[in-house]
Image (tube, rainbow, N blue to C red):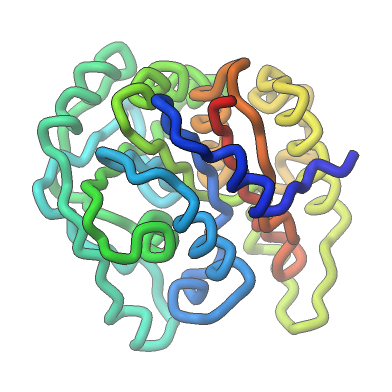
Length: 276
């Protein structure tokens, strides 16, 4: 099944709508933030076509909690450089977008049944700002993150998405940032690295099930079996994709972009749900 559509075809589907799209971006290496890559170019192009939201809610693989879902209510989220061993130029990057404390506190109430709590210590980690700088380079749209509760099952993130879906009708862009396949232990360094079989297989399985709206399988460890374990030694980078899936509905079209496997074991697949 060829599920890839061009950004040009996506542009046609992003005509003005009362309902905001949903975006999941495979963010990959932080170096995408300062290098001219096919991924950063695609994010820039996508940003030109996305509507301007009232605010952006980010679910990033890099904010993990246990037993609670934290919501950043800070007025000016700080730029977090949560990595090491990279060039100094990357640590100099800033994304000075304002937060939206009022809306963020509403999200705390919205997710009360999911043990949501306020937090003003986090900010924007590299799962957020490395892609936001291309989508909205002026950093003039309010943005805030919510955490991933790693103590819960996969289907919990679908539930979170379903609760957040109503924000789409209030001008909020929900952005998930992670990777459909993310196995750093199996990374193949070098320009000529080829996709590993398990990475290709899981990426294809994910795309097929997402296209068919079979979210139950995507959130079922038993059905995904050892292939999930190989693709995700830890599922933190997988869960934001489930949040975005959970926030979609039957009135959405689905478009894929940047569906390459990077470094052998990192899927850069990204996708957008947008109202018909």
